[in-house]
Length: 127
Image 1 (tube, rainbow, N blue to C red):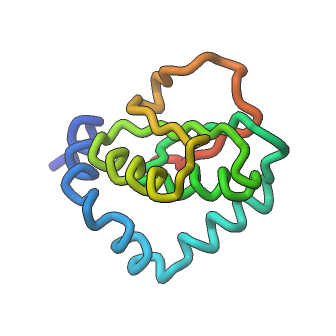
Image 2: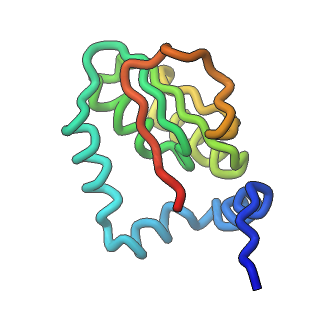
């Protein structure tokens, strides 16, 4: 029996777990997700206002980490194909008053953005 790895199934799966995603991520990674973001921003630090692209942003934690690391001045775009995850990320950005962070619905295979636009591009590689 083959496993359905279609984008529709994956989008649906992430949509179903979106309300619990951050908690599950912290628990299942034993908190390593936070250190991973700190290390990512330290290894590839923002310089100035960006722009920075976070592909497969999910609930926007890495996008927000880059915005904070920039001194809250960088323009950061997070792209994800799961609307419920983006809804949570947008609420986080609103609470953080992160006006430099924009979360956009889109597929990583067909980004709705112009080429050669971003200073930093980061994201998650799907297996």
